[in-house]
Amino acid sequence: MKLAILSCGPKSYSTQRLKEAAKIRGHRVKVFNTLKFAIDLERGEPDLHYRQLQLSSYDAVLPRIGASITYFGTAVVRQFQQMGIFCANSASSIDTSRDKLRSLQVLSRYGIGIPRTSFVHDKKDIIPAIERVGGAPVIIKLIEGTQGIGVLLAETKQTALAIIELLQNQKQNILIQKFVAESKGRDVRAIVVGDQVVAAMRRVAQGDEFRSNVHRGGIAEAVDLDDRYKETALRAAQLMGLRIAGVDMLETKDGPQVLEVNSSPGLKGIESCTKLDVAGSIIDYIAAQVDFPEIDIRQRLTVSKGYGVSEIYVPEGSEFEGKTIGECNFSEKHLNILTLYQGDKIIPNPKSSRVLGADDVLLCFGRMESMRDMVPQKAQKRRQKKATQLDPTSPVIEEFSHKHHQDDDDDSSNK
Image (cartoon, rainbow, N blue to C red):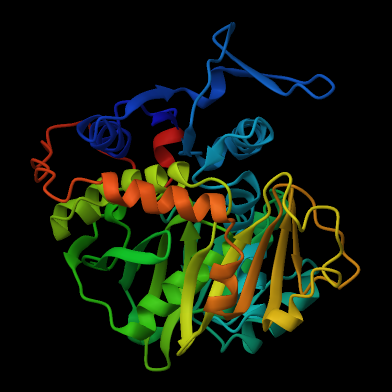
């Protein structure tokens, strides 16, 4: 596999680990500074140049897009997608997860536990909003903050009102969120890769600090998540459309509550405390997707025996291309379409009159047997052939040296 890693922090721990993991597995890999690309548009011929030279072909792209470059970064990822190159996380999924309000709206719609949250614009609505989320103290968050930056604790209504007015005067969009007392200074992070939670840690704030981020001095420890937390992490990542994600959750008396879903989670803290090869899991997943590009069916969540939530990719030339959802007779296959990802659009509960196109992705609930039957015969034969060629005695990967530059947790390596 020829892999491109997009990162503005080539020396960060996460980027170095991903690069090393790819090389150990025999893949060709190159790190690209996301901001050095030029996007060229011409009828029928999307293209990219890097440092004034035309980019050669790649099998897959692993985006590490920082919050400060979201617009340009996702434009580059979108161009790779238009060129038919597999992207570990799509541009639309990065955009959705990066917007805290939008992501919470999606999670709320599909029944994922979240802290009670309010978003207001008018000054007169601030105090009523604080009361609706449970009263002071409250958490105030910038919609586009990261690493705990732009997250404030207001102990009283008056303090909250003053902070919110100040931020709104600075043209900042903020969220008012319930302060969950039993989780003060503690949260858990689960790393989702495909349909698996590959690692998890608990972060505990130190001293009077209420933010548990490692960059705020928090201490991380490995944790074994129960099924409720694993299920919530998987569903949250998948509803964002992310194949690779870090899902931050509060541990509350009512069960897991999702704080945030990160499209570029940092690896240093979680690999250090769990001693797991998270970078290797990410590379292995991408390689598996590149091996079988015709149709992408991954069991998202097993709800009951024989049933689950999966996503179905519509490749160019598919029997579904150009047909409406109704004409595809999904209901006869015992499948219910939850969400349609169509280009940059995320369409919940799409109408039966919606026409499907190449590269569309359908998030479905239904019989797993029906979804597996939708894999083309060519893909099934290729999978069987690939399986017979795999060497089950591959050597154990040596432990990666931790003497790299300090990693910026989540997306900040690209700031």
